[in-house]
Image 1 (cartoon, rainbow, N blue to C red):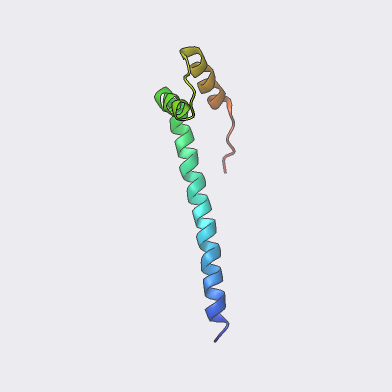
Image 2 (cartoon, one colour; image 1 turned 120 degrees about the horizontal axis):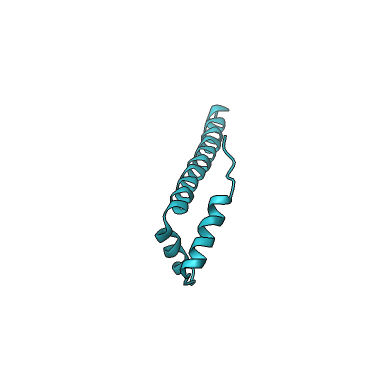
Length: 73
């Protein structure tokens, strides 16, 4: 049993985990950007969480999301 049979799976696991993390962050950021511009998507998410938002609450939620500063690279 050589050292390569131990090193290669470990390196593959680390590369896969790091790649999966960055793909997940990219996907989540895109979803949040879409949600900021689509009030129906916010309403749908709120209903799934058990909330029923009126128009004033929807506007407040949208403004809060737009004012959030997401760090950019």
